[in-house]
Length: 263
Length: 176
Image 1 (tube, rainbow over the protein chains, first blue to last red):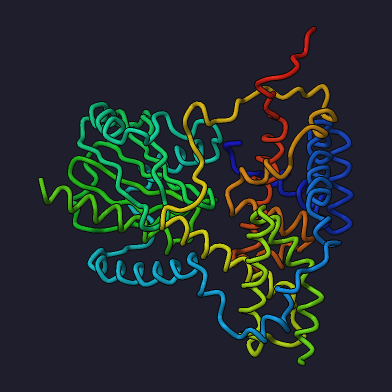
Image 2: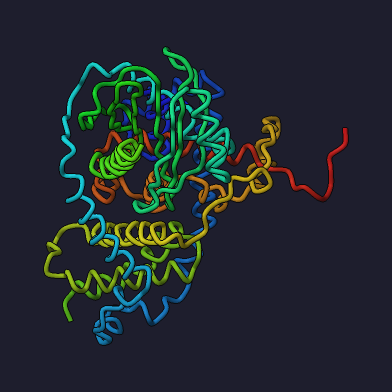
């Protein structure tokens, strides 16, 4: 599914979830009676609910392990949450992200609509098409990063390198070549442990002077940060909170600037 | 013993079901519940009597789960999905003539794991845990409109995954 849900989709869901008032429910039910394909979809949605209960309701009847009992936990008193390695790592990550904020404070963040709207819309469309893709989110995987970078650099005529976002929990899946209004564009895609995806869209053309402005834009189901240089424009898109996406965009921005300074 | 502690005990089965649907592995799920109860006990003073205890506990547990995922992701630990050709599931066109057969054969748990967390958590909260759109929006901290659009995307994606039920690579083939 590559399109955003329309009102009818929302109503079918709300019907299944019992969130409609009596009047709207009657209206939707009449509509479904005349639209068998949608009625079948509603039936499958109800079946999904039933299957979820079938799969997980057994837990409700299991005896609860003593270790979960508040009295036992209170008696132990040691904060076990921080004892686990993963939680200690979470604490370390918080410290690290705090540090990152300090390094990138020089980037000026300007919210609001800008002249780059068309570029961002292009990047957001590409995101909306490939983000939900289960089997083929990318055209070339990140298995061989040099090959990926060289290929996209050759086709776009710009020296491109996918930034490393693993410090923020996002792993490079790969990339693809896309048509744009000004010739071939590149899209890198990243994914985190929760299967959240963000894309980095790079398009040739004058995108500004690279003076360090990250511009925020938002649409239905996505936020985007864009910036540009004299020969290339860059947009990061994702369904993340603006602050989380900004951390990723700043990291990509810093890495790009560090690379061009070193050349 | 404060009354809230007894009420937390009453919520344990629901917390365990929510945890199981979030992380599938029963051991990991119970660790999550344990961490949640521990943090809730430490913050009982912040809980306002008369408000929704279940939603409060769900919020705490969901936030702990997300922190732990981010930590694992940053340390490179965990089960990253392979995108190699060999690792990818085989797509098979849906046989829409026999939805019942598809529905019976599918694995809802496996399909659920293929949803991105923002879509998965919304579906689990509404469809399994029976939370209202408003409660769900409060638990995950987004507007109800976002809950609704994520839920619609989530259900439709899950339906499509289930209808594209992969055929086993070995075993019986159907013959016309």
